[in-house]
Length: 87
Image (tube, rainbow, N blue to C red; front, side, top):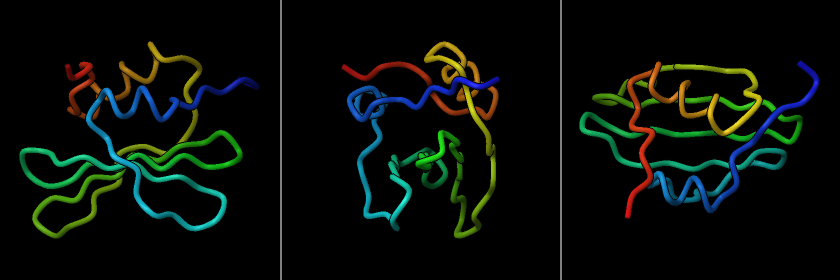
């Protein structure tokens, strides 16, 4: 798959994510979860990583690319993260 989709900041905000400081070449968004914190890291090359912190442990959930917003929503559900828009 040559094309990759990265969610815009507005959509991530609707999912409840807030922008965090990030190193060069990436943008990070986080939101609290019932058991810790969920983080989406967007990289300049089109890849993304989903990370979850639970009880001080950092869990890796996904690293790769998605092709569309629909695929992103499926991915979020697969790792047990809410994929509904707030508000």
